[in-house]
Each structure stands twice: as structure tokens, then as C-alpha cells.
Length: 262
Image 1 (cartoon, rainbow, N blue to C red):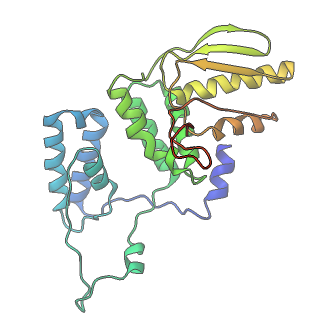
Image 2: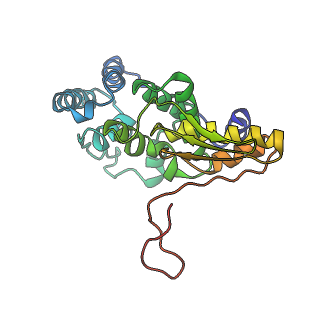
């Protein structure tokens, strides 16, 4: 699935990774990235937030810095540091047009985003094999246009919940009981992003051997897009179904009160 997905999308999403050309900018940017990577929970610590803010403001004042650099978005949404840049005017005194502003937008390749997410999971103590799986499940959503369950979920769903002790980066997967065609699994509140693929693979293996496989997991956590798991089955030559419980957030047809999960 990986190779096919990348080859199909390369034509419509040319890779372009931001990299400052100024020496001072490169140094400041590397210091910020190191600060994030070496201390993933730093946004919860006042001294770390102050250090990040100081370095981010210094980076913002380096020559030719790009205001659209993702580090400024991270500073705003994660560390609470908002950097304001003056609107640049053209030589004739007019503001740049919408088309000209669009041309300055940075396109970050999906492979780069996946590698970034894997590094984040590793920094939290997720095993390398599980970090690879977790980042693969998350990035699968973005090329499909499911922005609600992809890269944007990394911090608020996974990082924040690991910070809060709601879910854990490295928990075993225990099989409580099983038959030839069914299984009950306990995820021990580990990351659903690696529990889900493990359970679907169990179901596929049972189906290949006995014609049908049905696996249920308890004590799991958010597992990304359900379509990832159905695709695992179809790639293996099976018909796949996947579902999970969720808090009520959608009202039924003609209803007003949220009763269905999302």
C-alpha cells in the first residue's frame, strides 16, 4: 500500500520541504527543532516555554525568515507564543495579491510529515516498530482528504493524552481468549494506532485459514481512520469491516441532540 500510495500522489503533490538559506536562520531553526525533539513535554513546563519563546523570537528576527514556517504555527498552538509579522508591501506600495500570497505557501511532503510523527512517537518512548505503524496509520488519512484524523490529531489526541496519562506509549497486547475464528484482546490502554493493526492482522490470519475472522479489543484508545483497517483486509484479498465506540458527537437524521459517535 505504501509504494502504491506514494506513486499515485507524487504527481499532484510535489515535495517541497522548507529550509532557510540564511546561516543564522538555519542555526536558530535547528535549535528550535532540537528543543522540541529533546523535550516533547516541554510545552507543559514554564521554563521550557520561556526558552522556546526566546529562541522563536530570535529566529523571527533573523534576515529573510519565512513567516509561513511551521515552527511559528507550533509556537502559537503548542507553546502559546504568537509572533506578528508586518504585512509586506510591493514596490508600488500595494499589498500582495491573493495569488502572490498563495505562491509563498510551503508544501510539506507526506513522507516528511510521516517521518516527523514517527520521531515524535519515538521521543515519547514508543517502540520503533510501533512508532512506524502509528505514523503510517495517521498519515494514511491526509492523502485521502480526511484531515480530521491525520497529522492534525498528533498533538491533541496522542501527545496530550500521553502527557495526561490517559493512554500509554508502550503497553503489551494480551489475548484474553480466542477460537479459530474469534478473539478477545486487551490493549492495556496503549496506543490504538498499533493495537488496531495488530488485531486486524489477527482477523485476516484467521479468515485466511478458516474463512472468517472476528477480533474485538478492550482497553484500546483512538485508532485513527477505520478505513485503514478495511484497506488492510482488501489488500490481503479479504472483505474487511472495522468499527469502534466513541463519545456521542453527531445528531441522528432530523435530530438535534448528539447521540452517534464519530
